[in-house]
Length: 579
View (tube, helix red, strand yellow):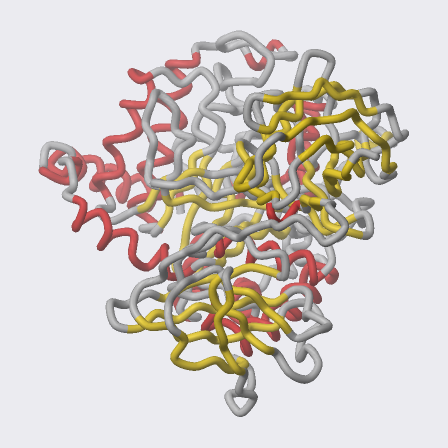
């Protein structure tokens, strides 16, 4: 088998010499770029697969559970190369069924998959001429794992992608090791030149996977030590498969086609860029036998909707066992997501981001045309009074439930735009999709947060404009602004006063340590201090100070970290007239 692949590689190397001198790497026009990205932008939902030798220890080394994500066990436990390589003798995925994996992704409503062809431990799931640290030479299984999955994916109508760790390699001499200098590590076997590693391992292997499997996506990971000159060794290889889509993790200043926020959803998406949030279903990418912290189906579906409503794709991970089985909790959840997608997929596929600010009741996705636009209203919280505000000024042409076209809803107008009057109970407790047709392209209007009859102004997470990595979480009983881990992030709310005056600022907050921040309305600001509540899920309501607002009309309240700030979760900020 290795001799055959040697002939193939030699042939493709000669072909590549021609391709690399062609116009394949020439700058694209916008139209050409859009055409290349079209399938990816329409797909919205994909399967990530982290699989390798790390599935053998499954999070445990020498009888001790190793913290962190499962595929990092070699680095976390600083396992010597010889010891780690011995795990490959137990990597024998005789229960691997690539057709079942592809069928599961299709059933879940996914349109593409991406699998780790080589992760940071350096182990290749394909026969490689560059090394014997691969599935064909180092395991009892002894044959290719990637090719059969590529074929199965395409049989099931899925696009196929390959993850490749181009810089970090904890087995081969000279490969990058996080936390260590160039070519160094925790084992003498690591010593070597990083540049030699790139030339002898990374470049030949990328050439192998591009020519052999012709992936639709190449998903680079961790640009550790990657300068522009080093990245230029790899980037030209993309000409071997024109039309391929790459991400932003090659390094050397190359942006690729897609941004890759990991384990979080950007509060406002990433305007001007195609992007894809990758997430685990539990706490790990690679299999860990004792990680049972599974996300609920509700969380997975609402994550998908949230991401698509902000213009992104969702790449959801599974970590198979060393025998080749996807864990049952992953299978169960993917099938449950698939049932929802079967009824509501129209509101996900080929849609674009919401034209309005995030509504309190859920999310919006869009299919726009010049004459008529379809807004898909993803209702998380079915309103008790039936009123569903939609912040557009367009005229409504019709409204119905997506899953049941016979359920027709009335659309009317108020000062905030359109109001849909929903009738009956929510058809889906997780997310009910409502189809709203409007004339023309969406014309968004800002929601007016008005002062209540009692003089109070209540500012909720769903009404905030969030800057940075902040996002609204539906946890701890009620929605809250969470993931405030960067002191440069901020939250702001527009509101309108009819009765100005002096207000007590009341916060419903949770934080592990005391937190200092500034609350500002116009030129008036308040230096506030939140006391520790013990943890991020324990909320306490307290008065933070007073603000004087002297004029009626439109205002904006901004909350931003100050000196002495620590991470805080925000359930609400209320302006209460001072007695």
